[in-house]
Length: 269
Image 1 (spheres, rainbow, N blue to C red):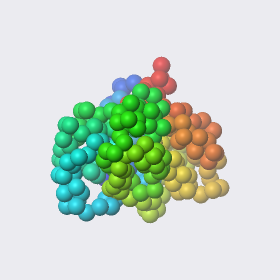
Image 2: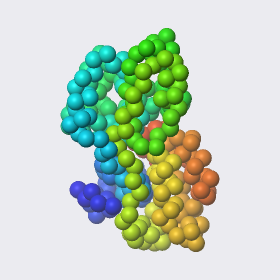
Image 3: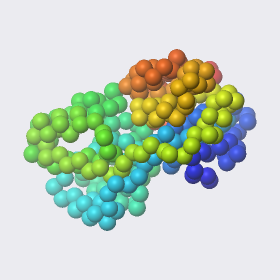
């Protein structure tokens, strides 16, 4: 499978009889995660075009990370803030002790943990974000006061989770497992797809992704070839970011790959 800037329809042949036949989705997620959803969409008949607007690069020494994960004595809980945090941290088949509580802010991150063999994941009942996590019983002060919590995340993440848990008395350690980078590859193919009207929907799963996408399209062209396309945003905060940038039709989906697929299928019903 092509893991370059694009995973074109040539690389994955859509099921032409699937319920999403005729829908051409621009996927802006990092390459590994984008490739996974691209396969699922193709099975359902959609044509996926992968254009990662964020690149993920490991930011810690793998041996140091393995050492830290191998010595989790006294750790009450670990929190993975994104699918990429899971992918980078557990890429070598590292197993977490079942006695440690594992938290994820959204179902997409929980799905990624499940794929890595972690099935005891705690997620919010609603509000799939840091605010939702902080409402969970097991993260209240009575449970976390004086206890160690590790947060695995990327650079530049929100500080709310760390700050609030620290206020509740937890001993919080933030581990920056990856850095987000803006791709430098010329967006030639992207502009061709947009200009030729080959994209019929855009999937966005982070505010940074939509900001970087807009930045790759010349300002004079955005109104004509980009902002009129329907955007599927996986969170209300992402939806607000897309609308603020100028997109005219932004649909909030459920979290993760399942949320996107459900929204696209609903479009056809």
